[in-house]
Length: 118
Image (cartoon, rainbow, N blue to C red; front, top):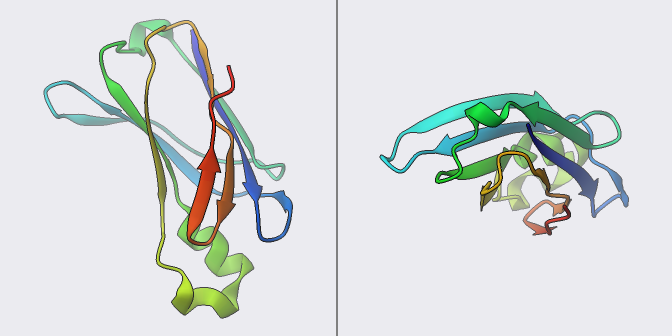
């Protein structure tokens, strides 16, 4: 079983970013795309999903898509016209179907920082 997790942090307010919709998409070698899951971060900005190892394609790429636009529109309504980034997309591989892939992000209205923490 693989574990995909994240911790979203709000750089503007210096706190956790809860309630952000996140979709994990599998990008197969033939170009097809499939949704693996669609969830929201909890109030503490965390998300953890276990994925059965047989469902992991170790040759595929994956995208973790964070819908940041609605989050910042709700938390910074006066900045609506200055925000141009509506999603943050992290493309990564899962070469080990039994590993943990923890991708925490620090989010701002038009930027982000990410790292892999296994």
